[in-house]
Image (cartoon, rainbow, N blue to C red; front, side, top):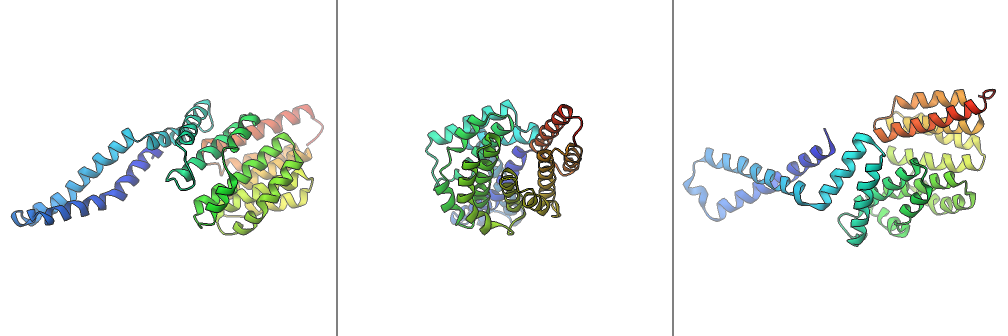
Length: 295
């Protein structure tokens, strides 16, 4: 089922009871129920509220800029992953919400953060580091830190992903000083949230692996990669195997590195995750071809 269809269905499930109660209340307030048979009343309650719900949900899908933007972004992401069209629709929505002055108290703030993080990730995947830096700079980390204390797992996930994106950017530009500043800022939150949610753990393991790998501490980097590999869920096993491939690539062990990308394919569930596998596998192949006596 597509994101748009799921979004539509969720709207119906949430709003149908509300419209049922509304129709029930109106019929009793105006005493209409006295002149109608019970079967007819039941029919009106159920199907009348469903009809209103469908009209409401359809109108939201057609006319709400927030919903149309979300459908366009998530539809492209789930169908094709990180593409030029994804950059186009996501950039447009990010800057629309920015001009709308989306603040931490706004209803769309958490979704807005997700757009920014996905957009920065997409630029990183496409090796446009400057655009990734400009995009991640749209987030005020202090606002995000405050929101993460609401115990909302979505805000916590966005805070962890914010640090994760920053780590990946540091790796791309080989900036150890920036990396250390990011880790100094991130470590209290990574330690606080570690071990409480499998999605959090996948991103935290990635952040630590990149940090220690860039500092040449292969042993500790491997430990964090293996922490994900040892989990039972697909997300962690995907992330862990991809991290091990990256560690082995750094060591020049190209055959072993490539084998981990092949294992990661078994756990990749989205086009974007498959794109990162292909990118890393291509990098490993290019290095192996350039150094055929290694790996």
